[in-house]
Length: 213
Image 1 (tube, rainbow, N blue to C red):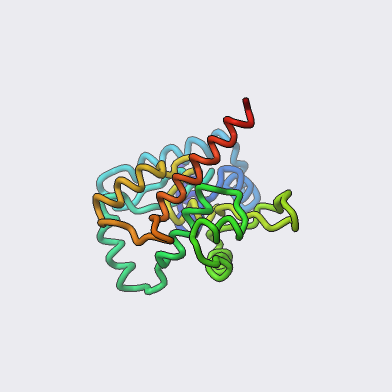
Image 2 (image 1 turned 90 degrees about the horizontal axis):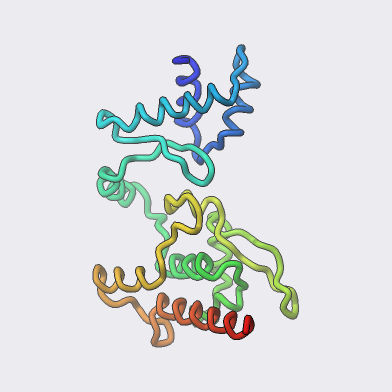
């Protein structure tokens, strides 16, 4: 079904975010003049995925966040990263990255918890991350005042190229890698952000073990 492959490719090429199997099937079924069953679509996705694995192409189709999307191959990432640095000054700041790390590893988490870990008020940066759609509201805490809870968004997974949150590196891996590649991290209240997160996680595990006993 060469024609079907072309239609699928055209949608994935135009998409700015991963397209799920169900989205593709619904779209093709409603727009094409012939019936497309799910098996045909699976076979089409397999064919075009294998097609772009060839060394002739600098990009490929990968499964990400429960969908399919075109992505450049890893060997071209350094070159593309340099281009993006030149073409855009809207990179995430160190403060934004630190706050994202806290949300990612502690989610769902409140503003107060984020501020306590960072050592400074986090209201402004949380608002900016919400505007960038990198974090989302996850409901309300049962604590006094029912403060909002925050979690990472689907956009967060796409931004960092993750299939799901379980693919995040372990905190101790980040700490070790960061020290070896970039020197010591700037401390917050005398303690690096990764160490504070590691301590928070350890304390949480200890509290859970005590409760279970």
